[in-house]
Image 1: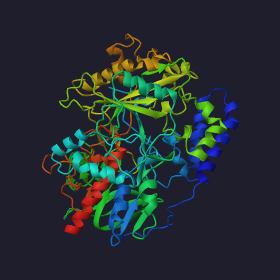
Image 2: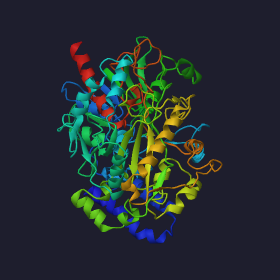
Image 3: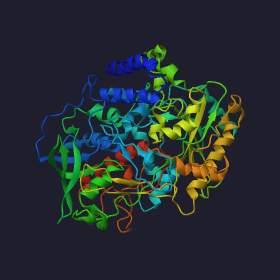
Image 4: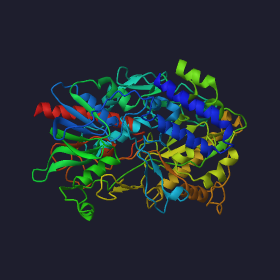
Length: 627
């Protein structure tokens, strides 16, 4: 009922104010964002995790888990299965309003207080047309971490990813080893799935998206006409096209909080504490043993002590910061800020991410995609969703289909290994009149007005190519020794010296164009929009030089950062944790999140994060029961 009230509040605002905004949809965006922030912790919230006003310092627990994203939530759930273990889970954010469970809102949620609000640092080789030359790097700020604001796309990754992960000196992380953990978490409701590759009964629901447009149907058929088989991309083969699989149930988001914490929140040995921002790990500098954490709550500094282990699950962006503030990181960098060095490790020196390009989209001669204003002002849309759990509000931000391809520039020896993912959206930045989509990729109004505003109210679809195995590597540094200062994120997109990433992107753009020429899309007159991106007017449209200029002008992140606390053998000099997730040289401290992944996966990292949590819990249980 509280979700219905929250969304009814938004509907009233839309119906009352739409006629008054005179086409200024930036005003509409501000209204909706304000409304969502207002309901964040507002009168429609019924807390399921009541918090004590004050927390005693120096309280002892067996395990302290820092961060409640997918990995941290799984570990909290699984370790608290042991009645004799006392668990503390600390989350920097608060409890999210149940309005976040409405999948359609996923994009808007990134514009609210549920996002840390991080941006990458300005660099010269990419994002030249973005606001201030910076990219948005969303990161969830609430119980459930980024799983409360992501687009819910469910992709495990390719078996080759995990076999190569193990081959880097990490026994136990092959696909054969990880596959049982994917199954353990999963509760599949998919209609089309490969036999033996899915499971029922786990905590995390995986479903088909109930809402599908005719545009998505046409794209699926067109991709097949272009030679891409229909596949279960989490099954036998990944190369091919499919409707998207999502972490939803009956048209509702399944976040880490909903899936793994909510069912066990009343366990007497599990304490879940919100608004508690960990500022450092407490480590004895002589014995190099982690024994607790310091955290900030309501402006006061507290400490909590761990008898067995501290488990850092703050995510690939925040875990490196906490380690470095604790004296664990690159010696020279820590000394720059006067931080006493406890362990010299390459924390944050390596980072991979999945870049995506928003600059290729197509006009149609028939309205078969998303008609946003019609949907938002229709009572049918609301009744369909709240009575039947289907319809427009069950869509995951408009993403409906995806294609994994191997481009003609790939040199990988395994012919079954994709190098690009194509995400189909039955609309584009013009579909919401510049309210949300453009802001997610930090596209400025001037850029939007030049390219997308002329298309407002017209049928358009977009395909986002996503580079799954970038050669370019970024890194993370501290901004200061103040734990409340955000780190510096250097994405380094498109910086590899052989220009491999650019060439792969261009090859994917060519394949998107080839698919658009297939009969099922040509039936609707699919035609590429040839308005030149500002700053690239000097190049012939559709030339390789034009697309490289475009890529370096507007590009975005799907926030799949990995390798910031890289896993690897102890003495190779490039890793932070060992294959049992223990921080090299530090006792009783593990990192359990996507930062440990040593290479970019053919995946959306939400699902691997759950599997990492599942495996970590088993490793921890094994270590403590066998010692």
